[in-house]
Image 1: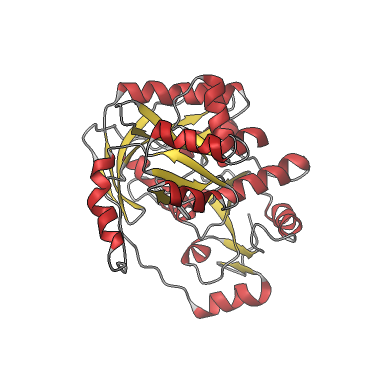
Image 2: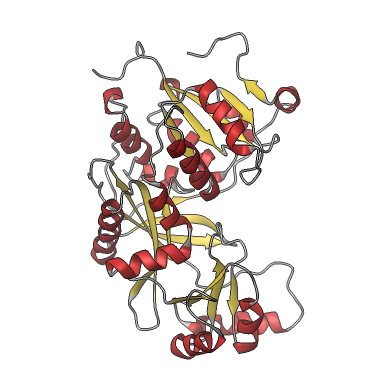
Length: 384
């Protein structure tokens, strides 16, 4: 049966709808050339009130921060009230929290497109990602975690092997928060005292960083941006039944840590590597939208340095390039819906740019969400 206006609307819950990922999901539904927004009842959750995406939903709930002890109970209440068909998460932390919550209580409504809790943690925790790649023979940046990889002597041997500079990042991190360059052994010692940090080889040409590092040795700039931080970001959707979508390879340009330009490229090597990642995840119970980020090491070998198993801030850009993640997910988990899919012809030379967009937040709507913990676009209308 085709998806028609007579069918009940698809009920979608977007967790952390105020995030960039939440914006991308909404933008994908409202894609001007093929809008599906009228076919979906969208509920959102957020811990922040003054976020415009809250009020792009049909209904929004105020919830505690993900790390709060009250979060599981509140989210259980929201799930039972919204009765979603599908739940999508806007941040890594939400993905793990919702997977724990919904996998532990099968009575909670809604389907998550992220496989097992183990597969979610494999993508979220970079130490687990490293072990996963080693197990399946997948190329990943050489990495070291104090205590897990060894002691200071072992760390010294690691730095001798891979050379400076290093990248140091939180084992469970996102959006490059807390990521630093480590330029020498003294800085290595300092960062090694931070809890939950991983050292990685720098993928790229160290010479490109020399002028940047010199600029940091003088008066400290108000804003800084390291050169040559672009990467190949490769996307594929893994079906719960083992189906794997076409692979989309993008060369992504960053401006102060934010992706601002996506260029589709033909890269058979990265397509093959990413399909190997997808097959390995599938073998361990993982499915859903997968992103793997690659850069070349100093010998020219392509290595992954990040892996995400969730919708991303590039979801809407992918739509322009013929890669409809949302349509794939809905039809994979809810095939009876026969949800419309955006089928744009892929263009190998297509470029998509991103720039900030302005939205408004009405004071009355914000006040309602603040006071009652819930806002509905039309309070006179009952939920479908």
